[in-house]
Image (cartoon, rainbow, N blue to C red; front, side, top):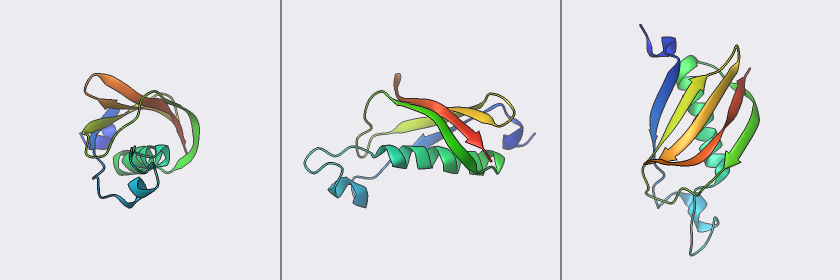
Length: 102
């Protein structure tokens, strides 16, 4: 059974404090930009299933991810071309939403 046969996928997630986006997002109190988290979900879907994202159906940002924090990204198949994603830090949900594959 290959990884793409599984109904879900979990990947570690971490953005180094030296990432260039932190200089402007936000100076003195940096957080990981939402677009970086969505791109991580799209990259994970591509690596897991070989699929590109057609659209982000929904996304709910619940709490920020800070530089150098460890988190995990989980993707779960939920229909023909839809995938639920969740970003967690420990037991805390930071982001959840749905991707639609092309």
